Every structure is written in C-alpha cells, then in structure tokens.
Amino acid sequence: MMKIKITDFSYKGDGLKKQLLVSMSIEGSKTVKSTAVRIDLYNVSYFAERINELYSGLFLLSAEVYAIDRAINRKKDSINGWTRELDVEFKIPCASQFKPLSSDINQLLSFLTGDYWSCCFKESPIIEWCHQEDIADYDEVTQVNLFSGGMDSLIGAIDYLETNDEHHKVFLASHYDSIMKGPKTDQERIVEKFQQKYPGKFIYLPAEGITPMESKELTCRSRSFMFLSIAMMMAAHKSNMVIIPENGPVSLNFPLSVSRRAACSTRTTHPIFIQRIRELLNKLGLSIIINNPYEFKTKGEMVNECKNLQYLLSIVDKSNSCGKRGGHQFMPDNPHASHCGRCMPCMYRKASLIKHKDPTIYGIKMSTLFTQTTKISNDFYAMLNFLKKDFTTIDIANELLVMGMKKNNPHFDDYVYLVERTREELKDLLRKEATITIKRYAGLI
Image 1 (spheres, rainbow, N blue to C red):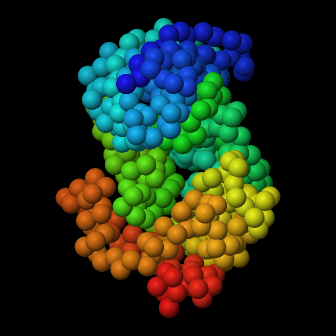
Image 2 (cartoon, rainbow, N blue to C red; image 1 turned 135 degrees about the horizontal axis):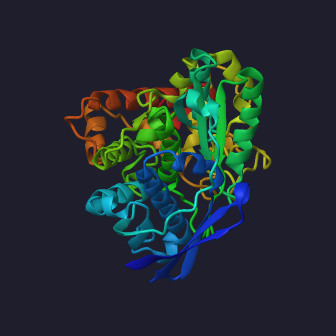
Image 3 (spheres, helix red, strand yellow; image 1 turned 180 degrees about the horizontal axis):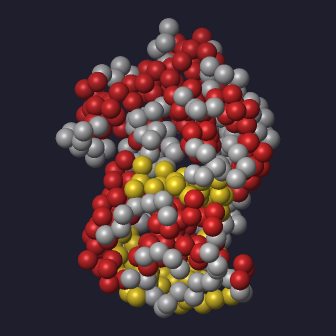
C-alpha cells in the first residue's frame, strides 16, 4: 500500500501565465518519492469565480488523481503487474462535503483506473483564481462538448453546429499536457477548419496546463475524470449540459477475450463510470446533466448519421483515433503514418469508414499484421478470435453481467444489440480488406 499526501500549494506567474503547483509525497513507491501537478489557472478561473465551489473541489480532486495516476508505474509499483494500492490524503476545496462520499469516490476511481483507492479529504488553502471581467459570448453557451481531437468528438461537434444557430454556442472543452502534445495538434487543426465553416458558433477553450511533473505511467485512465471536471466547470456557468461524444463499442469496451476483461478493458467513458459520476453529482447536490447521445451507436453509425457527412469526410483526416500514438510503434508499412493500424481504435476507425474513402494513413497493413505475431501486441488476433467465436445473444448478455452491467438496466438489451452490430461492422471490414487466408482464419469463409 502506497501512502500519498498532498503537501503544498504554491503559485508562479500572474495573469495568463499564473500557475498553481500542487505538491505531494509518496511513501512505498519503488519509482517515485514525490510528485506534483502544475495547473494553468487562467482559463478555468473565469468559471471557478462564478459557480458553486464544489466544482472547484471536483476539479482539484481530478487533477491530483491524474498526477498520482501518471507518477506511479504500474509494472514496478503494483501488486500484480497492474493493480496499485493507493492510500491518499487529498487537499481540495469543500473537503467537508466530500468526506461523507469517500466510499463512493473510492469505488468510482477503482472502477476507472483498475486500482485500489482509499481516499480521505482535507481542506485546501483558498485557491487564488485569476479575476476576469464578464464575457458576453459565454452567456450564449447552451452545451459543453468534450473535444479530444478524435473522430467521435469531431462528429459530436459537427452534429451540434449543424443543428443550432449562432445564438446557441457550444463550448469545445479539451485538455492536453505538455508531455502528450498530439491531442493539441489534432484539436487545433480541426478548430482551424471550424473557424472557416462555423464562425461565431463555438468557443474553443483548452485547459492546456494540467500537467503532471512525472510521467512514469502512460495508461492515463484517470484523464477522463479530469476532462469531465473541466467540462462541468464550464457547463455549471450557464448550460448545465455536458455531452460526451463517444461511440458505443469504445465506451462499453466489450472484452475480445476472457483475458482482456480487466487490465485491457479501458473504462474512461464506460456507462458504469458515467453513472457513478452522475450519482456523485447528485449526492453533492449539483445539477449538471451528463449525456452520451452515441452510447448505443457503432462508430460506423456515427459516421453515416452525421448531420453533415460530406463535410465530415472532407476533414476527417485532421482527427486522430489511434490508441497507441506517440509511442515507439511497429509500423513497417509506413513509419510516418498518423495511425498505427493495429490497435482496436484503429480497427474501429477503419471499419466505420469502409463505405467511404478513408484518407487515414495507417502504419501497418492487415496482411502484415497477420504474419507478425511476435513483434506486435495481440489486438488483431484477439479481434479475429472474437469474430470467429459463435457468440449467441445469451453469451453476450452473460459477458455483460460479468462486466458489472445489471440485468434490470432498462438499456441492457440495447447493449447486447450494440455488441452484435459491432461484430458485424468489424466483419464487414474483413470482408472488404482482408486476404482470403485472414477471412478463413476468422471463419468468414
């Protein structure tokens, strides 16, 4: 069990460049003894000064969780090569209102990151936000969209911008840190196109400076909590509506095999995680509405039902869906590609665009993947085996129950049907692009 304690709050700079440095000590780690998170205050300060202080508590909590998540290496500091035991004393605003909810927060974080969390809360020093005058455009915001720079968030933004006038603005809420710069480039390329197509109809406000001082762990599962906390601060000012534009298969992350139920099952926008966030907000007395309108759509359905499909296809190459970008990837067919071509997010992207001309450049072809079993991760073969297996409706339902979904969930059958359609979408990809040998392996011929 590692004991983590927030030790100090300090400030640097002023105005646009004002930063808060939250320091923390770590006992029991083999890789790090202390760490910190650096937070650029200017953009979030506008909202923090105008909304319930509980949102600032959620924001600081998420930033501290993110710093801890990134600092502690799973392989070296876990009990089994994955699961870490984290006993944390947080310092956040409104700590007294979070204390009775420590069990809920433990469960939320444990589900999200796959670790054991034991949290307690102490009051932080008063945060010195950056004072700003009122901005009239912010009063016209009717929705806040998470905006990552991926294809799903691109579709979510287009769908809003195509169905609302200039008096109903959308906030494109985003985050990136200085260690992971890829999303920043994706977002800026899309925003440049939006400025030409939808001038005056959106506000792009990146919370660019929430940067952990250590980056020993790159799984970053807690990032979605921080992403949501930023969006909720913006939404609490006027709209009260946060939209998570994420396709159903990625949110649900139905395991491709039994061995991928836990460590390989990312839960960043999982329905259970989102429901626990909603329950936490309700217990705190906060009125934010969080919704994923694409929860029961495949990625291909998101593409084909986009409110401006032609425009989407003209700029889709500006977005990035790859789950392994930024690492040292095995991409023998094109080492300079924007997408690795072998992770499941890349597979879903390929499958979603099979009815259209896909401008995405992938680093490895399907035929190469099939012959390079020792040099790459097993996502591709896991997918083939998943598609080859004769899953019945009952099999899918039983696996959902193992994943923690409840049979009395009113949408349980919708999740089952989503998995069935996802399998067909991936099979269609193989039918179009795979060699005869691959098709035979997957049981398609």
